[in-house]
Length: 112
Length: 112
Image (cartoon, rainbow over all chains, first blue to last red; front, side):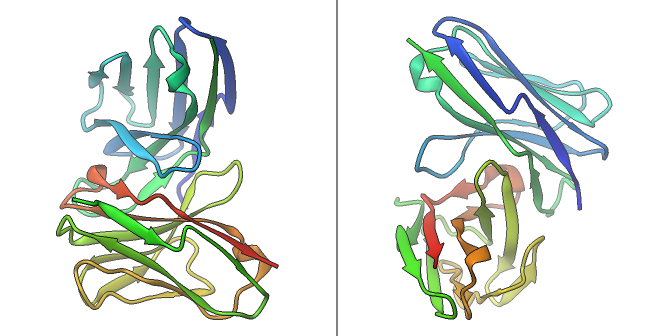
């Protein structure tokens, strides 16, 4: 099946710092998604990207759909303690119906 | 609007026992999914459904069964529980496009 490589696996940062994480794939995806999972909860969609090169923001979060369609990046600016959680990227092959392939996640810890 | 609800929240099974994980959504979504999440891993798709009466296997279907008799419900059945099925199970639903997947809170299953 499809494989997504997500890095870093974990990050421990100070409040106020900026954060960057990325996902790469050997295959092309037509849609890239970023989810956040709080401890004990299900994933929640943060940002969806539909076009190569697209740059989309959601508050302090910014994500980009790589030009090659094989990668995506998520940046969090001015991190706060409630940013703690696991961030997952997911790729979708077709714009119609198709299943999602998830990365293994980046665990983010923010020290006050 | 409760979104996606899952029951039970937590369950311990003995090897060989069976159980059904319940999933209900009240958003009139056609698409529903079952994932499992193992520690340090992303979500793996078990089964999915594109509408009532239609189901299909995902990446890791062995040991599971599903049914979709109504739009709202998508139960996941484990017939002979094995330790390898110890995991957190998430149900999700979506409207026409995969990027709008809404996840339930998860069921934590321990098989001893």
